[in-house]
Image (cartoon, rainbow, N blue to C red):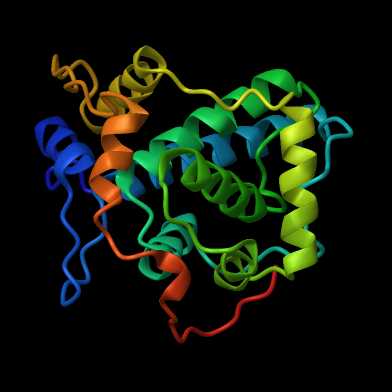
Length: 222
């Protein structure tokens, strides 16, 4: 991630006032920041695995073959085909952190990260946004069979105890953590972004329902 190109102030603005432009290839800055965080987590877990052996038995997200796609590219793909808003990625980040805390036998790795991301982003999208694609569409975007994604969603919900609520203060604290990723000790404070789920949803009600949009995309398999 280019720290000179992304500032905490720009991230803050992007999180809360990102505008979609059909003719633009730009993606929300939060994708680059989240990608950087996850890449560092992967590197740390890999070092721990080499030093102390494998992790616990929580392998619900493991795939048979490691996908040949970077975290950044995978997140950009999800955004490109779903147009999930920046706040969705923050909430997905909250879910991932909660999941890791609630399941001590689980560690993010190259074999599970892609499935974990598509599952949490899909669930976060359902929580934050009013209009959503069906699971079958998210499955195609993520490179899974619909049945597999349905099973991953259920497994995740039960392992989380269905605790999906993210209040404003929690949302803000994770936004601040993302800011620190951009500029350690930068001193910025993200404004009241999520503000409340209702405000985000009220803005999205005026958008066209996503269920009726169709996109052409290449399949990837995880």
